[in-house]
Image (spheres, rainbow, N blue to C red):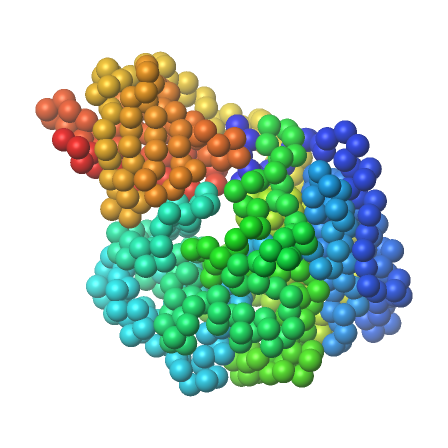
Length: 543
């Protein structure tokens, strides 16, 4: 079973673009920079022609329609351009002005918004969250009292990976930010407070609401008026004006071996419940200004100081220790890796790198900063294979670090092929091996009813003809058919062809023989962690 998440995390196999698409999608380029060589010390690095050839190869290899790249070096923009298509149907080219959703690279903007308020004296990093949001509660009262603004940004809350993300995705969400904050109290920890890294999105939304409460405005307005507008970034924290819709990139992913639009994630109204965690919309031109500002200690290229160098340093300060993988040691000579405030940090070949990725179905982003080289690189694309952004980032960074030439596009292509081969050779890794009987214990009608989870809310399990249908009250895209699997377990097959995360739903039977509740789990063990089915515990409420 192929999921869109597989494409995001490097699980792309051998699917290709539709006939004729590659020839046109990778042939177009828009750049404002002359093809002069980029210099680092005595090393001659990538020219604009080199970057074009590299991007064209990456788009082709990783089934990505379009990409924008920005590079800043020693205070100047040395490259800002686009390649391929922002829209397959119209063949509109990607340029430096093409708007993309930048997903989790938004988190650094939420951190910066808080830094602005720290500079203003409105709040402090170690203030308690409940002082700004009185309704904030974690499941443990002590953790609630001790939870600081810094804790919101460092992925060490004790919650599990992606906890509560089913209230955010698949968009559109029916939950308000107030409901998200309220429902945190029902999410159970999987580790002790501040003891372990587990990436989350909900707490960045909380951080955005802390900033909004302290500034007495919305997160969108705060980021737009205190960061984006002062830096003359043509980017949008809230709704994208109608006049800019023709500049937006359409999101695409690989579905059933074909490139298809991820319609639910189109840039139409980017202001959404998850904005502070991953909703900002920007382009390569704007992101070059952002990188120059970061590298200059909060001083924009137009001379505007949006936050202090002291707070920039605080945002880059390591907070949570991350695991260094064997491949990172071998590829990059990495010895340490940490999470800061909206940024990851690691060493590569002796240089400190401050970076973050952003992943949303149909969009990929990557921002990398090397302060010692006064270097910044941003990649934005409208595909779903992380190999495109990773191969470009590795090539550009390593060229500036004086590392030997290497074909990083081929490296990631080989790595993905090797991963696919391992999956094929390890059938025990998939729950698909357990086929079940195709029947269930009770008559179908006995499972129908109204079910409720404390944080996810109500779902209807309705008998329609001779089948059961799943419908969430809050998440309108979560509609599907329950197919009998075995005993009291069904497989939920979602109606939306873009939502590839089929799940088991196992119903609980009481001592009286009646169905009392249900739990949910991924059919694929490596399914998208953003769909945190494992945290659901439904109780039947219509008895």
